[in-house]
Length: 165
Image 1: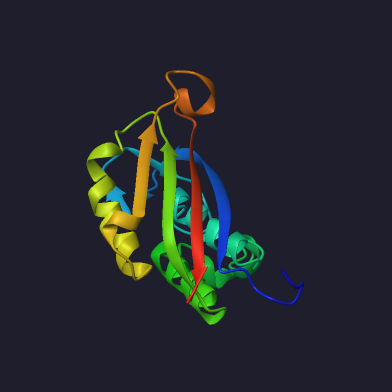
Image 2: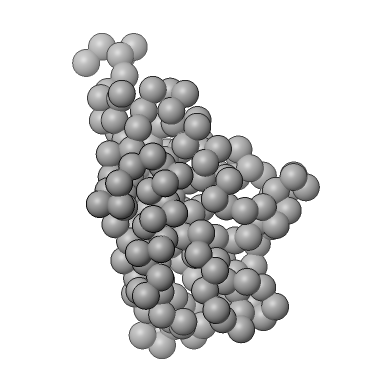
């Protein structure tokens, strides 16, 4: 492939991690989950949407979420990560790409994430202008091991495939 041509398909991966703390809302995949604690962060600390943003940005060679939405910028204080994902997807579309599919995993000991996955899929599919069938989300626990298992943190991984429109 000539060096100046763009590939039709690109893959990106993203990861995000946040400390858990009392007095914050727990928001995952755009869904508020009832809990006595939430993720600590500059924005709403939605670990899943942040990992997806990074995966999309990486696939399009557009750096990372911190570059586009720095935690030093007061505009992003307590920002709704659904807006960050929408703005990220606009950047992807400007480069001529659309989402093929994604596969994500959320790691959290408690509360259970699985009952909320359909709502997360719906929100993400709407933002990314695709069908729910293209949005795979899985959840697992730390089995009482490490910072996840001890209830100290939450982590998410995302892999995306984008394609030239």
